[in-house]
Amino acid sequence: MTIRRYALTCLLLLSVAATGPATSLAGVTAPPPVIRTTDQGLHHIGVAGGQLTVVIGTYQNTQVYKRSLSAYFQRNGESKLNLVPIVESEVDYTTEWFNLSRGETTLADAALVSKGSSVNLIIVDRSPEKNVFTVKRYLFREAGNDYPDGPGMLFVPQSSKTLSSKKSDSVESVLKREIASVR
Image (cartoon, rainbow, N blue to C red; front, side, top):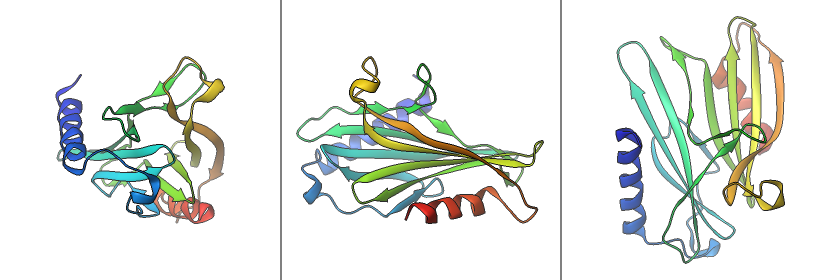
């Protein structure tokens, strides 16, 4: 475990200890409908069966910055937190997503969108060499029989598409359009 992950985990555990375990969906304050990677800190989303906690942090120096997003699930009445991976394929799970930047140009970004009882993760990547955007959507749900050997809760792929880039498009503008299409 890296020092950074250890520090974030300690911060998360302190937050849960201060607020207490999730009680029920009715007792949880409604989260903002959209959580972006620019919304640094801890975010709690009440979901059926428990609470989804998202940690968003930033690493930066004088030349680059990275934003990270990791998610944890806590079942109602339990104190343990379980890491929620992003399923990239049947055999590949990502436990922490990082965006990329080059100077002041964002090459990837993400947002969590809550709508009704579902939580969607939308990731937009830009390929400057090919001049295209890739948009991936994931749905937060129980693993069920689809992933019997994995964790109980996951972000599973819903769709992936490639969009041609216009000069005026940025990762942020494409992400904004994708968020609007969910809501």
